[in-house]
Image (cartoon, rainbow, N blue to C red):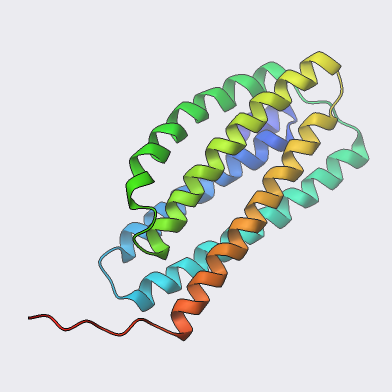
Length: 174
């Protein structure tokens, strides 16, 4: 987040905020991985709410920066997002085979997927900001990242709430 603040980049701040939130999401996922479906679905609700709050916060920051007319520092944006992209691609590929096991693991995989898209978007925005000398590409990517947060929030919340309302029957162990 500090690099995004230093660069004055909404897109990089959004990307960094997402990574910070993911650390909490991953910790929560590890906490509930061996627990009941109800626990995992409850964790999904928490994760969905966090994603939704991040989306709303980023949209507010996009509005603030649009009002102020700020142009971010493209080189800082590009370097920070490139470093994050390498780490997030590793997580994405490690989690891919678990993405359809349950809502807990799916939400973690979705976080990694979102991170890869966000990192790539920040890199593209940095290039456009450097080329055009204007801040609107940063705001556009920041808004797109916020919409991705909100979409993921809706997807995770819908599935988790459905699982809380209609849990799968327990299977007999022989």
